[in-house]
Image (cartoon, rainbow, N blue to C red; front, top):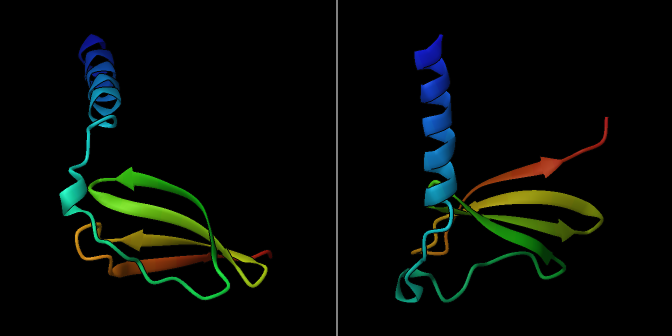
Length: 81
C-alpha cells in the first residue's frame, strides 16, 4: 500500500515538473489553418502536441495539432445531447 502511494505521488511530482517545460520557438509552425469564422479560445500542450480550443459557427471544438508542422492531427467537436 505504501509503495502504491509513493508511485502515485512520484507520478504527480513528475507531471508538475514536466508541464512547465519551455518550447523552442524555432520548432513551432508559423501558421495553423482553422476555419475563417473560427476563434481560438485557448492553447495548451499535452504530450508534445498543441491542444487548441476553438469556437466556430456556434460550436466548440478541440484540435490536436502537430506543433512543428501545424497540421491538424485530430478534431473533437463538442455537441449537446
